[in-house]
Each structure stands twice: as C-alpha cells, then as structure tokens.
Length: 172
Image (cartoon, one colour):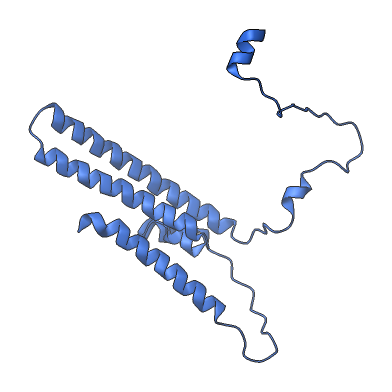
C-alpha cells in the first residue's frame, strides 16, 4: 500500500486541477453582457510557505503554479518513499557491509528529502511574491538594443559548418 501513496497523491492533485479548470470555464454569464471579475487579491507569501510546509506543493498550488506543485509533491514523496524502502532493506539485510550500504542510502535519501522540502518552501514563498508579476508585457523584446543609438559590439560565430574530429586531426 505504501508504494501506491505517491501515485494516489498525484492522481488526486491532477484530478483536482482538471475539476477546477472545468469549473473556471463554466462560469460565463448567460446573457450578452459579460461580468467583469473583481481584481484578484494578492497572494500571501507567508501563507504560501505555511501551506507548502503542511503539504509539499500546496503553496505552489495556492500561487497558481500547478506544475511546480506536482513537482514539489512528487519530489518530497519520491525521496521519502526511497528512504522508507532503503530502511526496510536495511532491516531485512544481515549485519555487515550490506546493512551499512542500505543505511547510508536511507540517510542520503532523507537528506535529499529535507533539501527538496526546503526548496519547496522557498519556491512557494517566491511564487507568492511574484504572483502579480505580468509576464505578457513583452519583456523579451525590451532587452534588445537594436534601436538604441551609439556604438555596439557584436560577435558572430559561423555555426553552419562545424568541423568533425577527423577534419580537425587532418588540418591541425
């Protein structure tokens, strides 16, 4: 039953995502006048971090980062599952090098689990801070300096013909 826990959790997370997405599409007005939705309230970074501390990935879900939520939950669940399996193998193995091997792997998996958990907390905090950030404002084009007067430096590399190893050995 323990080996199915991450699978059941992923199914619940993705099932909820599909259900909430369908509910959001079904909320259109029935008449010809479209209702303007009220501005969304800002997401609380502390609330996102607390949610992610209780259930890994919940803070990302709260900050509308559904894929990151699944990755955070799966990462923590995968590391914890690996630690449980390695512990069971250590208990079942005879004394000596084999038992030490499984104990070391269990400890390593627990350290990875702690690291993924802490990164999940930090990611939820940052996601909530940047929740209102507009990514559709054409920010990619803002960094181009083609229209700026003045001297520029450019490097051009001919990547259309890269010599192979045998050609470089013959010429060099």
